[in-house]
Amino acid sequence: MPDVKKVFGKPMASQDDKNPWVIRTDFTDDDKWQAVGDLIAAPRVEYDYQFYACVRYVSDPKYGGMEPTALVHSLPDDYPGLFIFIVDSDTLKDDEHPVLV
Image 1: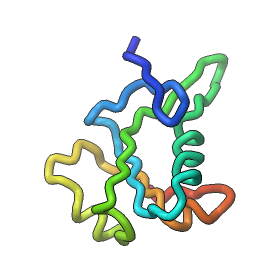
Image 2: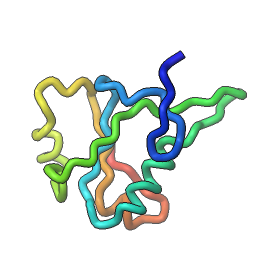
Image 3: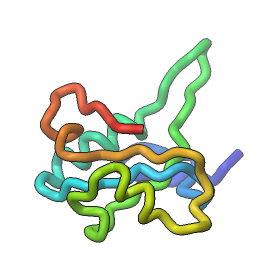
Image 4: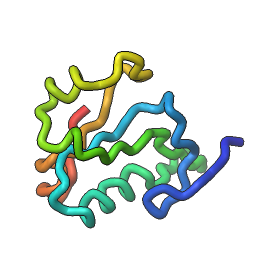
């Protein structure tokens, strides 16, 4: 069983470097960033099993205000994933917190 630690107040499987990144580009509301992180970290229950998102949270001001294309081009050459999740101003403003993938 993977090492479980608390991230965003919820148990998470891993913050492994190989997990896809959830990148914060809007730094105007820490509480809403926390709320989105809590939603992502919340367990999903399917067929009596709990599943957790295995992602790496990235809250780095260098990504602040970046447009999606620029953000993708700014990722390290050795980025391990095929996709990223972007938490931008639309994510924080909308009550349903849509995340760009």
